Length: 178
Image 1 (cartoon, rainbow, N blue to C red):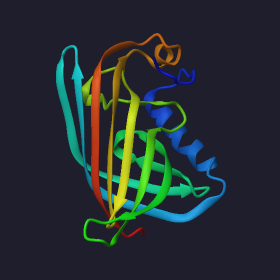
Image 2 (image 1 turned 30 degrees about the vertical axis):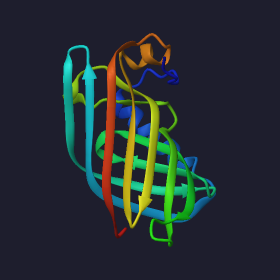
Image 3 (image 1 turned 90 degrees about the horizontal axis):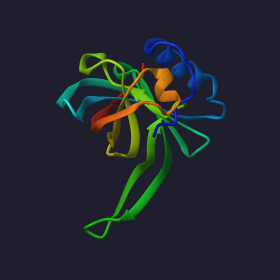
Image 4 (image 1 turned 90 degrees about the vertical axis):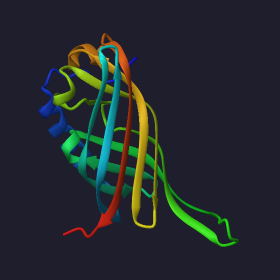
């Protein structure tokens, strides 16, 4: 079951609206503003067989209101949000380990993301589980869920058809923001 809002626009229009809405909703912007460059892998297990997409990806990262992270993935036409917190834990050798934790990584605004067109038409990623971690200036994201087929209108009305599952990973290093 999906939780998309009703909208009859195209995928590219939706992606543009997501970025605009996120920018406008960013009241209380924190000073954390980062960029990561790395690689992603999207693996689909569909009823028609497995499909994989992988490659280089730039990811923008920002924190709002001290505990809400916003992650933009330009090439994948999807923006994510997550619950953000700093964590300090005992280390293996008696020291302390500090990292930034991202929980409940999910699509921002509409709760589903379009599958890249090269992998199929009218396919959507419906998120179930997502986590992320930033440590030593490196961002790692891992999430998964179900793949739903249908038009945006059908998916919005919970009339899409479940056609498989997906897994997604991203690993990237922080780079200087121009």
